[in-house]
Length: 410
Ligand SMILES: Cc1ncc(COP(=O)(O)O)c(C=O)c1O
Image (cartoon, rainbow, N blue to C red):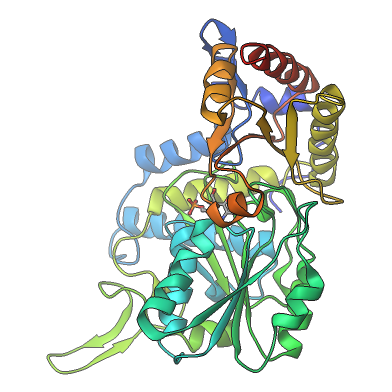
């Protein structure tokens, strides 16, 4: 930890995000799309500028001062990630482009060792990033995908999950927190059951890592994937945590510079993890930005942030209580601050566009979760997703704007 934890104060936190002072259509911006991508604090912007202005060079080729300084900063970012998720070693932290790339890496490398009839357990609430890479294995090798159903309240059907596990299960790949429902899955229980059946677990932590404290050792998870840009860091950088023995057993994903041991005309050997999985010039500046985001987040009281986000969600729910034109999807106990909804007689895109006129940014569509939309009989929904910088006043303004938007369709 770089600095002592500060008392959480939403106004003080907001002041660290330059973009939040801007207006949209003459109204103060109310940014409720952090589930898609979060805004960036000054600490991140400054860290990225600092490296570009002061010490930028390519990494791991260090024969000169700038290369050494940048390499140190890049590897320091890896250490920040390690500390943040309590990984035993920096060698278990692979930098990727995103959650999507992290999952593709595991699916394609691990998939090489699978055979027709082997099963991968996913769920109906997965983002496409945690479905499509496994579908590739179905198409290419005849792997069978088994989907854990979602209950009406948006929780995972744990009985059905347990029933799906068996000797053919070769991987359980589930989301930590749903980007649509806000459901926070009982990941410890999920992992224990999978391990009892002899299957490793990959958690999609794109949302989970933002709102939960993640301890990969306490969870005993095999792989954990997340993105920098949802965690107040930059785009273009993601993380794959993998247990040392799991990463050691994976063949490389991409070939190129930095990931090899030796290369001759008829032979190659590979570097050890994590470098085995980081072919070519990595996202240097972005990794440093992610490290800065994590260092910054660790100065805040994350329990207080979680309580604040829960209060925002409850405020919206109370504000819309009794609205018979509204259907909320996802009401699982203990869910995170994501409010997904459909308005009777209105397309979600139209609702989002009207809200934008009031300065309110929400997402609308399938949220890259078509099986889940189908499960709830919807073609699309709108979603307000909250972050640490949102205020109760903003929650009220969103409710007010939504009621007005609905008025256009009544
Ligand atoms: C649960 C979940 N998984 C995966 C992803 C994909 O993340 P990325 O686009 O950063 O790879 C997202 C993004 O919305 C997500 O919410």
